Image 1 (tube, rainbow, N blue to C red):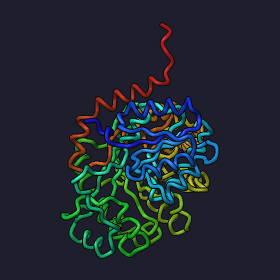
Image 2: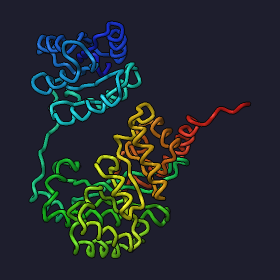
Image 3: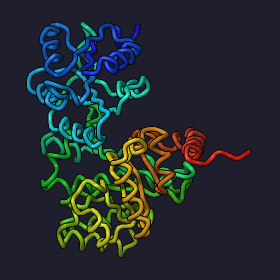
Image 4: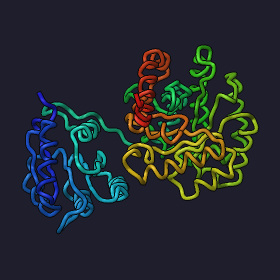
Length: 417
């Protein structure tokens, strides 16, 4: 049975030609019912009539008469929920970036992504993999848990339930594995794996943050140490919070924890965001870590207001470029401009560049063209438990090498012969 044959989709587009083309693409995905609307007002009327049949997917243009796509999104957030939303446009790609930011402010909207026109089957299929699915009749929905409390987090630390997952970082030119980033999770016997969205906000600004960080560092280095015997040049990236970096005495505890695991500081990168080094004590602690031989990485580069100034004035050795400027940069000139500027800036300062959020070969190709050093993202691997890392290394080398070659070939001139 087709996964979408019992589901309803709605295409909102004022151009009859483009609407027909978009509907054909949606039907090709196997949707049982595909409705159409000429603009936002027409779409709202249809949604009211289709109240008994929840719309699983709504695909809308931005530039339309009577009610444009941006106003429609606002109405959807207020009173016309649909399961999943995709936005298309032939206008300035920065409008699509604006839509993404608007949608992120509304928890009731599940924006799968934005697609420059024309809508194509591969682009739609890729985004539909991210769709929220309603469980079949008679099947219970998965349990939903809220934010963890400080008491629950403290118990998780005490009971050893804080666990690192690891996401690989690979060389852009060769696909060789250069390092891993340790990402915090909590594994509870009754709930399974708890994602960071359920505990990080509670932790921030609390006295537990430093204990949590030390637990994560200890668990991560314990696992990392077992890998260095077979991969001696592998590096590990560990995240520090603003609370960690602003505390003068915490730094000694942190370095003592590293020393107790016998890991060379040169193999460790401490990741911080630019806003975390605005205070003088934070900058002093960052400098101390650099003096001890640790690598220092500016995370989420490009999101803040003073990225270049902070990068130029702080002792960073690595620059991580946020996924919002990486994925899709091969087709969106605005993303490419920020990406190219970041890579050029880092090259001038002799800083290693790492691009986050690489999801397809086109992302990899633009990074190869612009001279980025390393990348990470779902194309390479999702975060994985420590016991899966070495088996993944063995099974993925050929794929990574061939993907790096394909990415490079995408921008190499054809042979004259």
